[in-house]
Amino acid sequence: MRPDSSRYSRQMILPGFGAEGQERLRQGRVAVVGCGALGTVSAALLVRAGVGYVRLIDRDFVELSNLQRQALYTEADVESGMPKAAIAAERLRAANSEVTIQGIVADLTASNAEELLGGVDVLVDAIDNFEARFLINDVATKTGTPWVYGAVISTYGLTMNILPGEGPCLRCLLPNPPVPGSVDTCATAGVFGPVVECISALQVAETVKLLLGRKDELRAGLAQFDVWDGDLRVVTVPRVPDCPACVRHDYEYLRAVATAGTVSLCGREALQITVPRTQPLDLGDLATRLEASRPVRRTPFMLRFEAEGHELNVFADGRAIVKGTADETVGRMLYAKYVGI
Amino acid sequence: MVAIVRIPAPLRKYTGGQRQLSVEASTVAGVIESLIAAFPELRAGLYRPDGALRDDARLFVGSDDIRLRQGLDTPVLDGETVSIVPPVAGA
Image 1 (cartoon, rainbow over the protein chains, first blue to last red):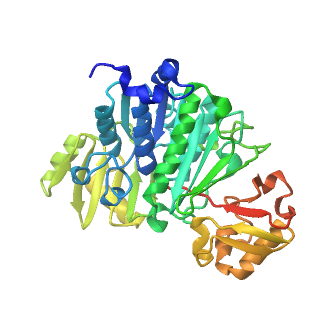
Image 2 (tube, rainbow over the protein chains, first blue to last red):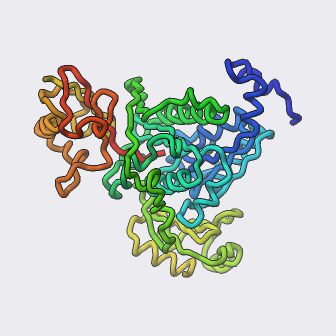
Image 3 (tube, rainbow over the protein chains, first blue to last red):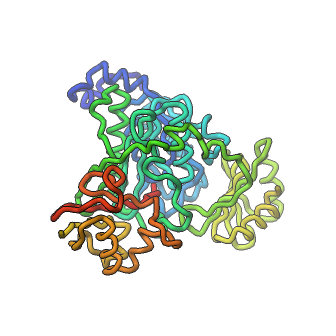
């Protein structure tokens, strides 16, 4: 479709937007970290608003339990085994072909965070775990990139603008990530679709203000919102005088060395097995080997097959998501046996 | 002094679903003590197993983080709101 400014006419007549504001958005570059519930809503709002470059980062594929609140995905996506970042990028290109959308299927780690999160004006947090948020905080602080924290659980959500060097960072709010298992996840406590839309909407409004250069209109402080109670409250968070990240510039999470690891995924009966590799896994070779004994579903990004009563999803970066177990020994055994270390 | 304590949705499982409680106390520490006396399960949302206050649950009096005032010794005035903000990770 040819560029036609009528696409943005209802936005451009808003006070302070105009053709100049729209052009600023067109020149804007944003990365949305996570393409789950918050990420799909934020990405759609940013792309439709005409932000010129939107990067979508996600490590996962679509599951049936996502469809209740992740409006970009369909039942066919659950079947296809295509990764969320690729599906979301394709759907949103169809919504606005004027935007450059890059979908990246990857797990955010200390070794790739600077590359994945670099070269953008704003980072929108839509990720489901604190470890990755502490990495985002390190990269954002190191590079001076504003980021917009957002998280939801149940009917409740939080969001805060983090402007490196100007206000509190994530580690001023939370010195360390909570101990795993001490915090409810969407799988254990549930999440109500409408609160996702509200928190993402707040995040995108702030992102647009940043892109338009209207920093004096940004909301200061931590916003808490409960969609059931209809209650939005903003509280003040202090900048910690000896904050390791934003004052001492010691980027502990970014310094962490990537190691082989197994993590359980957001409270669900699934594990992610990570094996550092010097070269990408050859999915074609692996599929040929496995197909001798079992059906394999192939996409350009991933293989899916069943082994010993579990579903294995193997990505080109060597990661595997093993479904149907939370037992690390079982997961690593299956990985070693069917993928190989 | 009677403080109004706001309980966020993720912690309401510990308070029998109650959203807001009136608590008689003169400091934030007193508020926490009374809350836990009334709802012992709430301890897990505020304290680590070793007995120290969790550093991932933030406490506010009015709109101020208690670190901006006097921490747990911050006085609470009659009718003042104390709120708890738990760590939230979901997306």
